Image 1 (cartoon, rainbow, N blue to C red):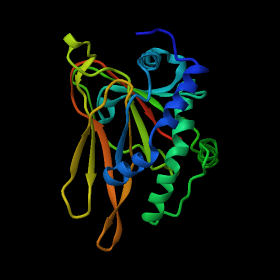
Image 2: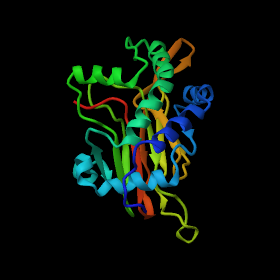
Image 3: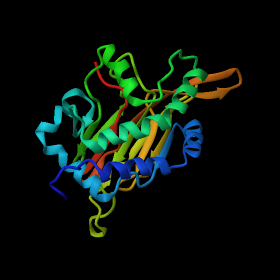
Image 4: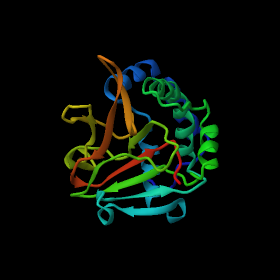
Length: 252
């Protein structure tokens, strides 16, 4: 694994190019239908390794959370401090405008009277003006036996309704070069007067998943209703798993 952090320049340009190359109409259709959509190959192996290597760089992070101390599960994560690493900033800036049309359409459908600006910088200005000024992108690390309980990443009044998780490690058997086994990304959906539905999203190193932070609309006989969403990670059976969380709102 590379010991050098990801650098700006060509790497960030490649990230923006990959984001632009996705079929965002199809992604919007998947989000409407399932509350999540895969972005295969969003980051290269080198970019994943470089970002995972930042986990132990104390200067890059504002805080560290040990999940077991708070009943969140097992494992740990670290929030980046500003300025964000260039690839993380590039992901925030390039993904956000692609997701704004879905976010605004969902709010209209759910009768949430909030509209999001087209540029991420303008949305961050809104967060900071309301006292949400702490950056929320984070790196997560899991070892054998670790897991992440089902949860929602809120942090304050201003919440962008979609977020992205990128798998930085390679799943699979050790004999095949995999870094870990288990540790699947899991989503649950709670529809009114129904039992919870669970979905496991298969990811390879560099793949990302876009998913609903808290709620999404679902058409019903009497119009749209709100479906509650939660996400987590199943128990890691072997190895070590790193992931990057890209959250578009900041924290109070």
